[in-house]
Length: 395
Image (cartoon, rainbow, N blue to C red; front, side):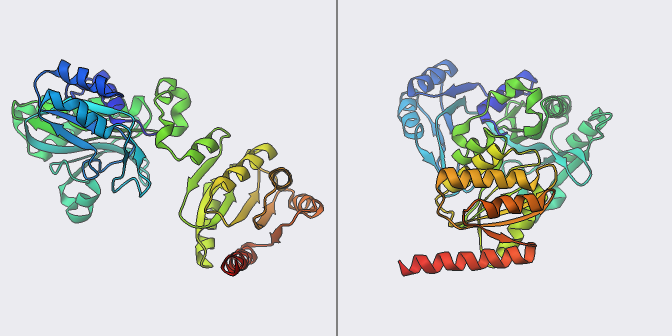
């Protein structure tokens, strides 16, 4: 789960990581009051959305005079901000972070993520802060410092010191830098983060270290341990269908094609995407009903798939394990019967109670295309989509 920059900075403050003076505003009056409290300008107004590249999209403004704060806030609040990371649809701006500006001498990158291959946290730092870390990794990987951390013992002070010396910053900042690194790691572990990032972490001309930006992502699977963090979720920044799916413990991802896909399990989801693309089609989305879905959850999942106006046909690819094929079939029949679905549906079932599932589909009196095996399913998806496109061109 992503949180906003102003929420991440509140966390930083709780973990003694220095941030600029400022606060979040949801109205122009709030923005003015916060700037007034900061005192003398210039001020920076930062649109709060769940995407990077805000500066390139016009979502970060410097305001020199207190009198201009309200006008600039009015310009930003309520806009749909399009950045290189939002896609063409953009994200709504419903809050701003109003902060003091700082005199910056040097920008550093500091982040912590999980290294999935080595199954451990890794602290990454670079003296090339302020840039996209992916570009540095691609063009000049030698400028990245890495410290892998053993879960059992945590990040040790000598590792923080090694990062400090690798960054080549003034020796007088040694203690401050080590404190920031160790505190960021403590936050990462205690809040079950999948990402904790400061970019840039700046050295000011007065010799202070300050987190100028902040990005924190919490592992969704650990939210049950952090109800305080779960309350920070901003559903306005998420795809409405993904939000709807989460109400039923379903995982939904929007894509750009025209075949709606229902699967169970992440591995089968990946295989299904490959299968669809192999026959020249494109998935419009995929919805993972997981292993413990009930027929009601299957029905709700199919409903969510059909809310997507890009979907021209549906492909249901299920390997019955804990989720039995007859349960899946009951849910699909119930959904098609109640929702009056007029789109073609191709179904491939294998696994537990597969024959019972096929009997339910066959006895429903409803129109389904049932495939046997992945190869047969692929050809039936391609053929069905071809028929849909032909009908569309004729009309």
